[in-house]
Image (tube, rainbow, N blue to C red; front, side, top):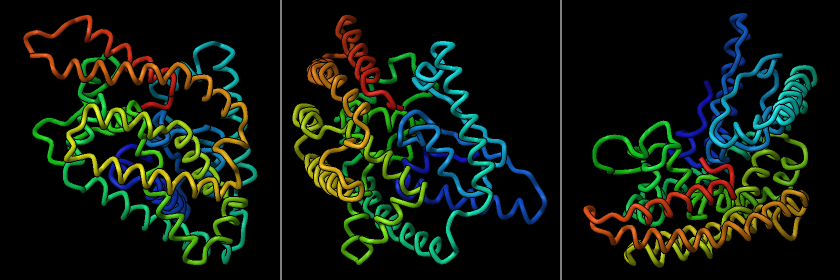
Length: 349
């Protein structure tokens, strides 16, 4: 089983995606040496931070010969309704998956480029991954990160909803992100519109790579390497759902001023990621190459934004309540706001 959730929580999206790609290649090589047929089980969640994204692109971006007539994948959360909510949707999704598996199996039996090109791309991706990892770890290891996360997101309130298979946190006191489970980690960041697991570290990595003379190589990778193109595309989609202005409302109203520096760092890195992705994709705006998705997100935004303002107010009121005086109507309104934002943004956890 290839696990996306905790690898992303621990290392950030760039390192998670790259190390899983390398691991699959290594598993394939070992299996081939011993004459074994391996079926990889992709433990994908709905969000980009947990391996989500367009299914067809995900299948076609796998290493050569790892999809050999077979693949296994999880379908979780809102993805089930989106992909199988009606017989027509289910049929279309299964046909698309079958076609992608057939294409990957028949047309990707060997690498599509020569060894020298692949080596250059792998070296570049290793550098990008390393820089992104260092930047991501500097965030999650910073003093007060856990306190900031718990205050700036409704993750604690999420535990009151009957939509999770596990508690939001592992038992015991919280000493770091290792005590937080991957699904609420992604869900919390998404609710507050920061969506850190989907892009953080990528901006610094791409800026450093381009300043180090790799600009042409990055452009080549985006045009010709399906893995890198799918990776950038998923980061772009996540950035399109991120709204640091709305996030600032959560921070100003709910987070102690001593932790506001964490938000400043996240916002700065968001700016780098936005500029870098637009540079790679040669666009003026996010999703210009996908006008239908761009329009869909714009329409949803009109409904999600008021819910975010309501949620901040409800969270502030809820946290001021004494435990013995909890208002059930306030609790219901808060949980409905969480549900509404999740439904509007999708790819939430």
